[in-house]
Length: 357
Ligand SMILES: NC(=O)c1ccc[n+]([C@@H]2O[C@H](COP(=O)([O-])OP(=O)(O)OC[C@H]3O[C@@H](n4cnc5c(N)ncnc54)[C@H](O)[C@@H]3O)[C@@H](O)[C@H]2O)c1
Image 1 (cartoon, helix red, strand yellow):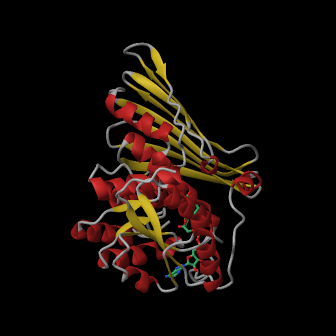
Image 2: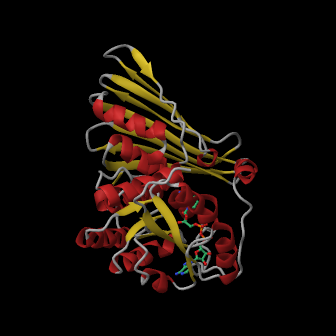
């Protein structure tokens, strides 16, 4: 495994499922980062992960990890409700932050975090790992450079009832702990809130990444046989339109993808479940030469590539491809607007919403 001579020293907060399935492996494999420290309040979980991943330091206390001068940046891999307060602590300690999606659970807390990022001069990136799928990145670059004016987007994200049969085979066997620190109550119990936050956050970020700012939405929700289907009509700031389909879960395979229509071409993408580390099948057609282009994207470990992208911004000062705090706040605003539209049946402007989903 190749490692650069200059590497970001990362401390990961949280030894839960996303750290075990994604971040530990991603940071250890990233060419420009090291897994310097891990942190979890649950002793049994932290000790088990310490034995497997061999970080140089392990902390039960987040403040103690933040006080370690060898930590350059932290990955905040804890429950959504903790993201903003714990990301703020990291910034106050002078650490760069890669925080899991969604950025937060209220628009106000996301905006206040954005202001702190701006004031700090530090880098904050949201864990919208799909931006680092080589096929999706290629599609975005094609749209920006080749496609001319955008006209329309259709995008879908449909979780599958067979999802755990698929992902359990490729993920490590998860360690759990009765001592894990979680928010009060069960934030996952209300599916009308939890699914948009956990899955919809990927879909709206993808829509913004490809099409730019969203101005308003009109959404409908159908609930049948324990499944939830949000169909959302979108107006984008550049005058283009969109249709977003969030369905959890389809009685079929994982279905994710998008189509974009533009002035000088079009894009089609079939996106795979991220745990397969398989590049999206993307075809970009240019009417300038009448040719379809399709990237191979041999390395589609999106969790590793998002860490590499994050480290490059900090170490080399390259432009940030990952979602910023402003992107994270705008994504949450879109999700809140979708929820308000479902409740009222009206078209809702993103600029008018407050609070959470
Ligand atoms: N990008 C993706 O594909 C993807 C996939 C799954 C989950 N996620 C996101 O990852 C996040 C975390 O998910 P999870 O299921 O791993 O969470 P989890 O709540 O199961 O685990 C978090 C761990 O962090 C520890 N912890 C929390 N606060 C702490 C503190 N202040 N100090 C020390 N330890 C603390 C807990 O003890 C727990 O072990 C969520 O926001 C989720 O949306 C992202």
